Amino acid sequence: MKIWWPDERAFAGVEHLDEQYVDGYDRKAGFDPTDDVEDLRAHGLDATSIVVDLGAGTGAFTLAAAPHCGRVIAVDVSPAMTRVLRERVARSGLANVTVIDAGFLSYRHDGPQVDVVFTRNALHQLPDFWKTVALGRIAEMVRPGGILRLRDLVFDFDPAGADEHIEAWLAGAVADPSVGWTAAELAEHVRGEFSTYSWLLDAMLDRVGFDVVDRVFRRSVYGAYTCVRRA
Image 1: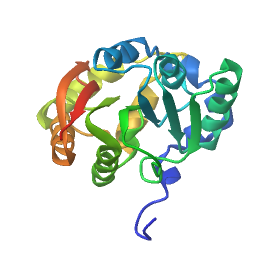
Image 2 (image 1 turned 90 degrees about the horizontal axis):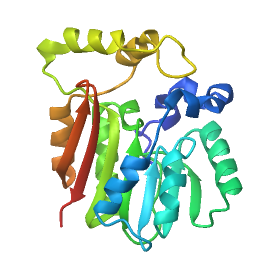
Image 3 (image 1 turned 120 degrees about the vertical axis):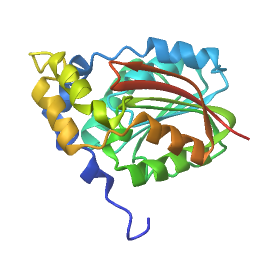
């Protein structure tokens, strides 16, 4: 790695490195990967597909996708996350999952280009310069015609509407931090993390070689993108 590249753990968020927080992460996140797996199957995911799950966390998507593809490479920069992920893979009996301790900027893909890259709630940890570097690295590992499925906090409004949309988002937060994110946690996200505007993310994706074929937003603050790698 070049000397001017950052240590990704500095961007990971201290809570994601904390074992106690990670042990309760699945309940807090409440993530059901069914729609993502079905979307990818509709775009060609099958028993021969190679999938990279970047920012795999505790492995909800990895474990749901593995029965439908040839191989899943689950990558996360947090040792606390990969500890839980390895335990879950071992209990599942799945033989087609590889867990790697790395991140968007440090994962080195070895082998043929992959069919799918999935990433959820992780890219926003990087500032926009490094998001673009990360997306470029993803584009290099995905075969032409392959898919990037991206879910993340992305702001789908004009800057003039920031007050209205952010306040509405915070107003819809939960009170119990064990079952979701509170208004204080969402406010901390806005202050200290790097969610970007949709029109900036769209330009990044196009620049590195992806066409956005579908995108859906919730409350104008959370986007689900399906992108195809251009030839």
